[in-house]
Length: 111
Image (tube, helix red, strand yellow):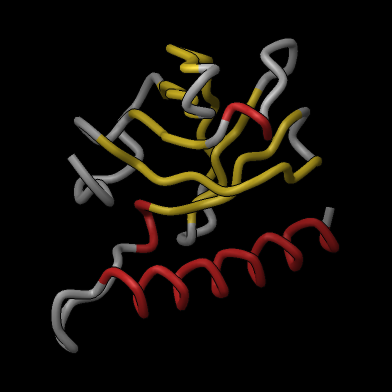
């Protein structure tokens, strides 16, 4: 499990740098690390990234990286795990909305 954690940490750092460079409105803006993270299935297989939206308990990702037959977790940039379930899939747009039972982030990436 240590190798997976190291891999996820590197992915989250890279994702944070990319998002900050493209999305920051000014030099003072920063992305809350609890609002971005890695989608993981069966607790060990990283499959892609996602970001927190809405009330802080929804994660948006791409349909092509998920398989609805698996349980998903969201591993945040603050190294916390949240179980997710598929809420809605927009196949044509390649967008998946996943939901956690609890709030993942008080400052979602987008509303």
